[in-house]
Image (cartoon, rainbow, N blue to C red; front, side):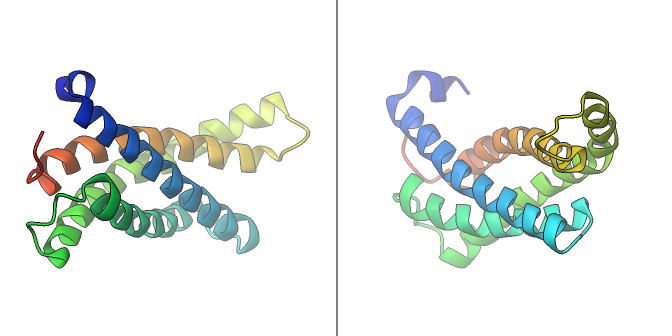
Length: 152
């Protein structure tokens, strides 16, 4: 963590990682909303599918833009490593979605924001919390395991 704060190269990587994460989050939220709102899929299933879509996008952007100097590993091996890290991220994410949705639903039912249904707000709020937590996990584990072959 200290290197991200003090090293300009690491700060740049983290900033790029955040940009990639924003693209991934847009994919994640977009797919989740399509699956839950239009296809009426349960949040955990939709959130898992949307996460996988975002992971694939994020891997491509990370390999070719954030860590272009990290190509000493074959593409397939690095994708597998990235996928393992993100699978652990799903293991962190699913309980947040599962157990966070009911209280969020209760909260948004009580405050009643007229422009949006409580169910919509609850799903998106819980997903936002999960994305933030998993973002930190993904950055640090990927930086120091998946992309540990880059120079500081």
